[in-house]
Image (cartoon, rainbow, N blue to C red; front, side):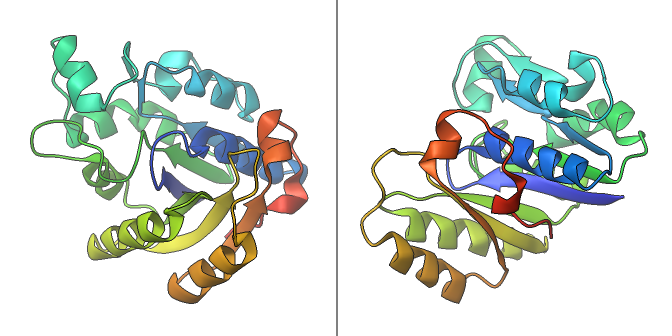
Length: 214
């Protein structure tokens, strides 16, 4: 089984969309894939993953921690009087992890350092899973700084970086788009796994030739 943790340079960068593309890519290869989202806050992201998975699992297995408000997990959890920690969240995912598939994807919530409590962040959850990381970069102004800071932190946690995917979430193409892609390729010590245009983001279409699996 090949396993990957999906993170992003921020929230709303298209992590779920990219994870769905990865699931479609695997299925197009006539192999099996499973994606889970351990934490979600005010989103239906896990439902989309459930629909694309090769095996049908209960929603609670795919998304064991659901928070009602679209806020940073530590704030959303506090408002619901819930206490989160990385070890407990990981344990809640063990049922999903026992299923035998060719590819397993674990999608984080928000950016890599979004807090889950007063002391831990999404990075601590990634450490619990101990998987190579795929970084989704939102191609907009500021993306180079956000991407490089995230890469630096991933590597500082001794997690392997499997690659990054450039995702265009805005209709207007970023100025110097090609130059930004080239800069990221030059400075990120991992391969570019794909460039996904806005036209595909607007309405999900599993064009699996856009991305490469690590």
